[in-house]
Amino acid sequence: MTRVLIVTNDFPPRRGGIQSFVHALARRLPADAVVVYAPAWPGAAEFDAAQPFPVIRHRGSLMLPVPSVAARACTLLAEYGCDRVLFGAAAPLGLLAPRLRAAGAERIVGLTHGHEAGWAALPGARSLLRRIGDDVDVLTYLAEYFRIRLARALSAEAADRMVRLAPGVDPAEFRPGAGGAAIRRKLGIAASRPVVVCVSRMVPRKGQDALIAAWPTVRAQVSGDPVLLLVGDGPYRSRLAAQARRLGVADSVLFTGPVTRDDLPACYDAGTIFAMPCRTRRAGLDVEGLGIVYLEAAATGLPVIGGDSGGAPDAVLDGETGYVVPGRDATVLADRLSELLSDPAGAAAMGDKGRSWIDREWTWELVADRLQAILA
Image (cartoon, rainbow, N blue to C red):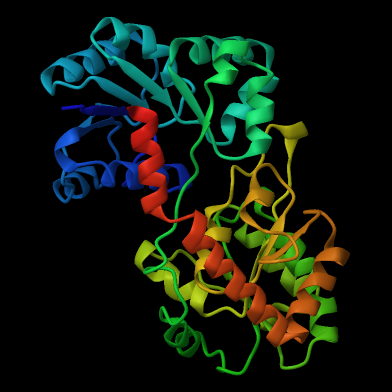
């Protein structure tokens, strides 16, 4: 029986999009066919006890492609009878591929996300990424944007072996009626008020500042006393709050602070439309990988406004399930927000198209089938 050793720095209980993606993939493999090797994080013991598969923890909070990590991974490969290896992120742990192949791995797959595009742009890291591409059997990519950027750093043979593998969504979890009414009551938002919701970590790339910059115009153009609901937390939060005060819209910009994974579907469902106008930063080194939040929002039946960074446009059917906007253009953003908020029927139609699109192309069942084919 094929058994997979997942070697990854990105795994819960640490929070993040990559961590959630890798965990979701692990859970959709047969429980007796997967073993995870990951760093130690606070709360790991409790988390691991709830998993249906073994999770072996590295002593520290970061695993590097050094001899001690290679030796432990090879030991686990033999101990659990694994013949497949999946790197949760190809860089840098994919540099362990030759050691693991020599130890008996018959097929090695490296997932890529967004940061590998930065590696592809830097001379030293670029050469390491090329080595990884040559040493694994498959590199995956999230979106066409990243396939193009990564292929420039890889050998022709490695580029030809690339396969798309993006996250999925559970439409039974993210759905209309998932608890938004309770969130509105908790936050004091009347059922009739339009709500623009943004679910994301508060860092400059995500574009919450563009939403706040656009908000005075939206408030002036849209009736019904609209609310901007910013869900999440992060180092940029204090600046965002100060910006809202400075622009005189603090009373209509609400910050939820950190929320649990279990509360996320309800937070989306509290919205009328979803917007996260991400933008590329640092000369292309800081880009959006895909934006699972756009897909979760679409599954909830919301029209989506996304930024034009990285793979984000792949998560929106522009003009059908929502709009893609320049992440730094608050004027265009305000126009799209006002358009959707002023046309509830049109916005609802986009939301319906988005939910149908998720059912056709973005469910975890489809992702699991693709992963099984890649590992075969």
